Length: 308
Image (cartoon, rainbow, N blue to C red; front, side, top):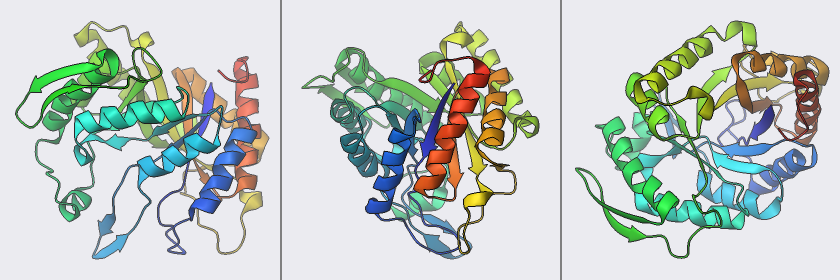
């Protein structure tokens, strides 16, 4: 079982603070040094709700910086909103980041969901799944063969990837989705799938249902579900490390010391989850180190080697 860290690149609810790169860098290096397997970042532009706005760093830029300062951990967006960018450009960007990271990119893709940010940045919100599917028909051939020619309803491309990336078939493709059309696209195209966000295994009945729906989609597409890596996003808190003024974790967060958290992470192996992505509280290097210890407990429980 792999365990990764979700970098907190967005505005914190209590303080209104967006962590500067120096603090994010410290968290990323702690993840690398503590034995975690991956580092992720959310792809959003702005959040607007009830008349208020909050900010977030641009995901891909942060990931490129993380790739340059690390050597071992996998990196990826959780997940890149394909409608935010031209899909051929996304393939070009992915090839460059895979080069910078020496083949450590997992390209997470989705169709986006927060309509206010689409409106704020003048991006179309209609036909999101249709646009996403057509965008995949540009991104995937470019990454896997280096060439694409598409004349679609929303996208056209006549492009080559030059120079090619460091891996012949491009990076691993992760798709996040839960509804029938998206699950069919996962079954058709993805190397990995993500569902989020959960707490303890006993409270994740929805995740079990989503896995069953994915299995049905795979059957409909003639895909062996076991060829898709299952990943899940979890909330985790280490209360002993919280200080006055720190952000409050969600009520359903897995909470305890490294031993207790590690055993709770390991419980997800019962569902066939192979890679966990953790939103962590507090957002400190000390907490990341404890998560590394918890990951070791989870791997030991599963009798799997340290890096998967």
